[in-house]
Picture (spheres, protein in one colour):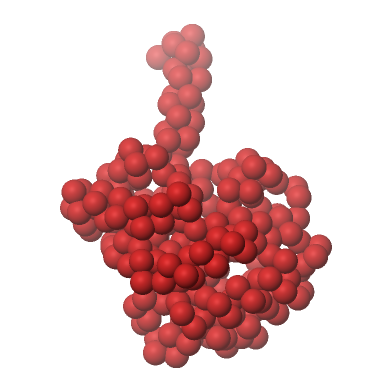
Length: 240
Ligand SMILES: [Zn+2]
């Protein structure tokens, strides 16, 4: 290739790559210098643990984003109302917590759509794939349904049965401006029996917020996206 052709090709391929990231990328965090971050909670709502968590968040004036499972949301409309009334955001974690890459396309579209209907106007157009599983096909489906896909760039491994000290310390150590933090207010399919009890995680969130706020402000994902530049990455992996 001549250098002239290369000069033409490079901006072109860069533009293609940028467009690919824009439309098929997955938001893992936000680029910002401000001390802001987003707490996110998956798999709820849960009748016991979600109200406990809401009290902790209220004590620290923290806002969060709840990626709820449609079946759970349908079973607990009162909790959904309470989450929304407290200023948090509700978003889509599929209706039946399906493994997106391993599910056929029609079932996948139907399932995400079912969760969207349950959430109604309260549901933000944000989707979190269960088990972090995503294929190019499932990402295109999310795009067609008008969703941004949001994963995370830090977590406390709160599905593994660790104690409060371990999880709180891990969260404090990892926190950076613009972080999106993965946590669970319920676990639909606990792999460790002890992890079904969300109380250690809720206490870890409490301790983490004691250490970090008010220096850090905890906002919803849509607000975090407004406060900085969303970082979109290639995130294609089987459900784990
Ligand atoms: Zn989940």
